[in-house]
Amino acid sequence: MRTVAALYSRCFPRLRTASTRKIYVDCVERPDARVPGELDVVMVEIGFDEPAFQRADAHGRKVIALDALQAGALKVATAHRWPRAPFDAAYKAVRALDFVNEWTWPRTRKVDASRRYFAYLACRHDSARFRAEIVIEDRRGVEISRTLAIDELPDEFIFGGKLGKLVWTSPTKVELFERFGERVCAVALPRSK
Image (tube, rainbow, N blue to C red; front, top):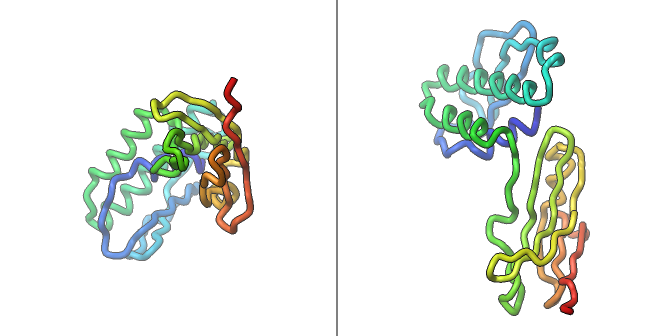
């Protein structure tokens, strides 16, 4: 499940390796015991009980997916003599979050020209959908507005391109632009009463 892998990746602390930047864990019935050498992307196979996964409820599927991901990642870590601690930290963080994959984007909230309002996206990536809302707050942190900006299938290739720039385009309007410059959503501050 992509949402579990994405959360694990977000929770993963830094780890310096000679060249590997990504591990792909392929869940198969009969895994290959070999682990490739250290490459930019390492693909590893792990044994997986597909019928048990299909019988499990939604939460159970997330647990099974996380356990398979961890087993594959540790298989690579052991083969390359990497420390186990970052993998265990990511695993424990996902469990502590109870598989809820929520975050704000961008990391630094966007402030308007008057410095009275801040805007950011509140993102939620679950197994069925990816949703992002433009949130506007005043400088005390009081929410002024919340508007759905993105509602897509939970695939980073689909929603990732829509996370381009969040910009105040006027004193009262913030807009989200995709990576190629097309507007995704615009939100105006509500009029004062």
